[in-house]
Length: 133
Image 1 (cartoon, rainbow, N blue to C red):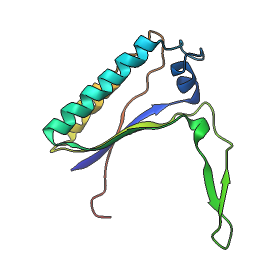
Image 2: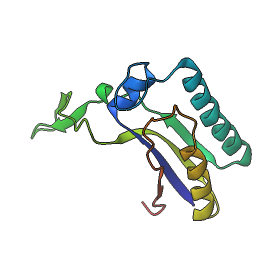
Image 3: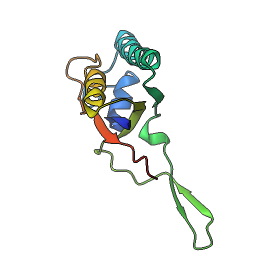
Image 4: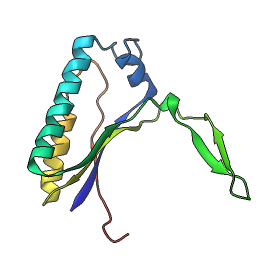
C-alpha cells in the first residue's frame, strides 16, 4: 500500500531556517546540517528497503502561486492572499510499505528530526493513497 507522509511548516519556520528569528529560534548552520543528515538517512534507508517512491522538500510558502482560471480556461496566477499562521506542506515522502504501522513508524522517525530547542514541532501527517483512482 502506498502512503503520503506530509511534513508541515509555516512561513516563519522557513524564515527561522534562513537564520532569521521568528516564532522560534533562528537555525544555525549546524542545525540545518543535522536536519538534512536526518532526512537524508531516512531517504537512504527507505531506498535501500525498496519502500521509497518519492521524497521532496518544498520551497517556502512565499514562493507559492495561487492559480484559478477565467471562464474560458485561461490561468489567472496570483501571489496570495495566504493564511500566514496556517501550516502548509513543507515536504513529503511517498512510500510503499506493507502495513499502516510501518508507515507510522517511518512518520515517527521523521517527526523526531533534530531541531533547535524551542522550534515549533508539527505532527507528520500520514494518508493512504487511493490506489483505485
